[in-house]
Amino acid sequence: NWTFGVTIPVKEKYSVANQMVYKIVLYLMLGIVLVILIIFIISKNILAPVYLMQTSFNKLSEGDLTVKLNVKTKDEIGELSNKFNNFVENLKNIIENIIFLSSNVIESNENIKNSMDILINGKNSEHYNKLSEAMDDGIIQLNQSISIVLDNVRNQGASIQQSLAALEQIKNTNENINLNIEKANLSINDTLE
Figure (cartoon, rainbow, N blue to C red):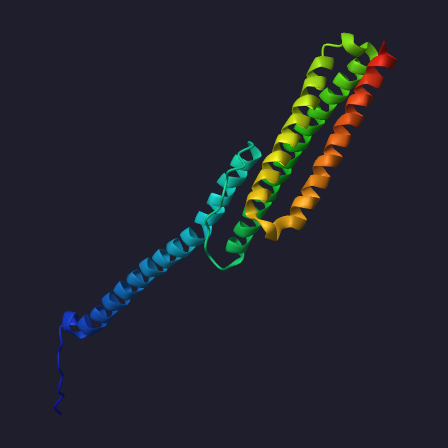
């Protein structure tokens, strides 16, 4: 009756299993670190443009119309950035138009006020001389411009004879207009007196 028995130290028996457990734990830890790193990179790429947009919206709400988003992605965030830039540009154009129209309204109101003063006070108006001088200067400049154009056209030669005749007609018409304006001024002066 023989029995045969082998004894293996426990350390040796579980050494292969322990090495496998260590490798599994190591790979699991590396996998977790890698997943965390990937999540961090993806979230940074998604959240960075969102934070940039938030900052730009805050600047816009404070009245800064020079804000531009430089997000170049081709996803929804990039599309939203382009829409934001278009919105800011349109808003800036609207405000510039309002400022331009406001200045025109102010200038028109001033002209109406001056004209009313001239109509009410006649030659005694402080604006009468300015208006009269402005009209005279405008007529003189127009006549000078037409004369310069006529001289230039004459220097061009015979091929421009038709244009010269038309310009002379304009000059004559302008002189008639000058005479009519002077008559109208005299008539207004007579009426006001």
